[in-house]
Length: 550
Ligand code: NOJ
Image 1 (cartoon, rainbow, N blue to C red):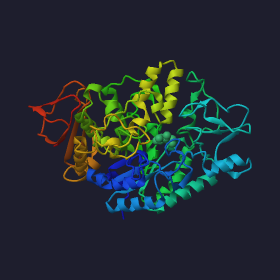
Image 2 (cartoon, rainbow, N blue to C red):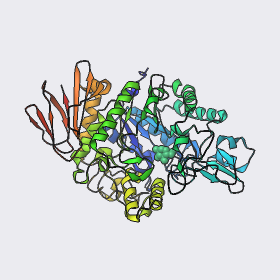
Image 3 (cartoon, rainbow, N blue to C red):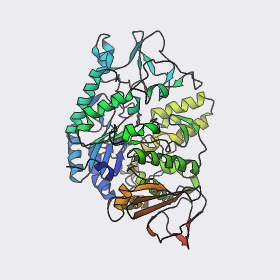
């Protein structure tokens, strides 16, 4: 019997299946491709993979628009391929978690199609339809434009928080909820280790559907304050857990943006809805809102540190966190957090060290372990991501020049992390033998998985956390942030009984001095070649990170 909190010990690797490895040379990654690369993941040392949606889908949002929850998208393979992948991964000691998208479906899902065909169909109540001659309110969807889409032959609109091809499910309907629970349980019965749960804070909408004061030149208002983390959501989330997850010793990772810190206990406490959730408060430091990329901030390391500290404190007080610096919706971390002249392998290592030893389960997004950077595109046609296209047009609407709009998108595009994985320096990076669905980054011939120093460093970080004398403290130790350090240095210690591990990261382009009076510290890991440790003083180079044991 597995320990109840077995997931605290995991290192989770996120795979974007479309871009990981193409086994049949159609330019699109697939399940057999993932299977082929399991030894690479084993070598890195990760213990669980989270695979982004692999289910039947028209791929408008690359799989977050599901038309059959229990079918495999033919581009990715078959259910037999999935079974084989699961079996092989488990044989290597790697668990598999899948993406659970239950806030919405594709408009091509048979439920939605049945709802469209017949007004009297019970499936109408599986979604949110409203009668009217105009849009029922002025809410803007996450991917731009109204949340309402008119039916062609009726004065009826349906609701979508994301793209119009992603109609939201009506969680107020108990029959629909039951269908979802049964589907979830069938997947868990198959032997997967759990789920990452997409957009889960959106499942409850304010039932008044009242308009809001506009917040953009399009005359609309972000739907978030009426559709995300709204009162009453606790009823659905408790039921979801009770009917599904609780019956299995599985891991659940909630994608839960917008949860106020006061509510974290409900989400991740001992009786919480989920094992852990992602906190976006510090990863979105470069923008005022994750969906408005033209609202950029001039953030400082001090502000970043404060946000990180607060996040870790709240997570520690209430439960467990899912630590990450990249995912398929974010740009590459090196490009976001490190000044352009310093975007080196060393800086990539330091950034890895900064977040990897925080308290919680570390997540690594594919090719993050290679120190990948953003891709630069020269025209908007080169983007695939629907959110990039929306943000480009909205920026122009808001009065920015075409060039600035493109720059906002290049900095934040979700395509940045979705480029094909560069396995080697061959054409198309060994990802595929044919032109991939999305162009590679320009850096791939020089940055790929062959003899990559960042990879070797990530491997060491994983080893330290998973095995050996500091493993326990790095996993289960409490976290305490150190206060007497320069603003540009993020310093914390992990403590378990008499064991202590210290982490210092200089997240800036200036040299910083730290006083380390007290007991001698033993160096465990260093992002830069040499360490200048003069008596009682530690000199950190720009973007250097060090890890010590006391
Ligand atoms: C969050 C996912 O991470 C993102 O990729 C997707 O577009 C939206 N949810 C909608 O499902």
